[in-house]
Length: 219
Image 1 (cartoon, one colour):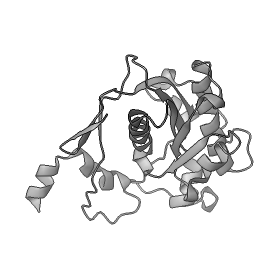
Image 2 (cartoon, one colour; image 1 turned 120 degrees about the vertical axis):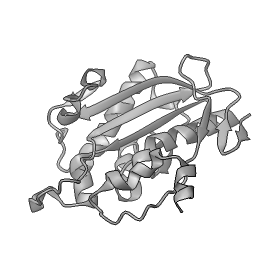
Image 3 (cartoon, rainbow, N blue to C red; image 1 turned 60 degrees about the horizontal axis):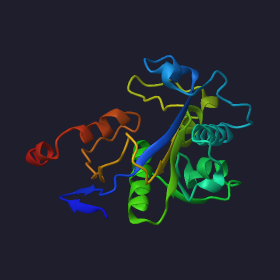
């Protein structure tokens, strides 16, 4: 069973990350890790009629790629922990609606994948499941429509504006004893430095990398 040490959760059985996959758009593939992705989509519409549908298909394809690596089918999965950046987590809901698998929808913005892994590890450690999926996705174009300026507006981007990733990641976890295991986790805290520029998400998220003690001393 898991035990709590300070604010961290330490797992006795250390759930295994057995299989995983990742798919991205053309821009993301041009970075230093471009050769590591399982799929690269030159056409980020993925053949769909809307950006939101594209995001759902991206998430579904990536998860199915992870299943194929493990020679698994949907019936082998006990639960899916997933989330995206859209209202009501519609990308996740529509991606997995025909799988017949129990779904736990999550929303943690940039932390969604970490949040899904923590919940998956807790569920496996408790014995409530034997095999689960952790997954997330985002799409630059659907995110612009959701949070900033729809592309159709032709808005000029500010120098500090962020570029949301067009990509998806999925991992299959079980109670095995493989090389990649989750031995501990820690749920984060909210650190609000009062950044009010909606376009400057970098400044809003940067305090996470600063020691909590340093921030408390500044107060």
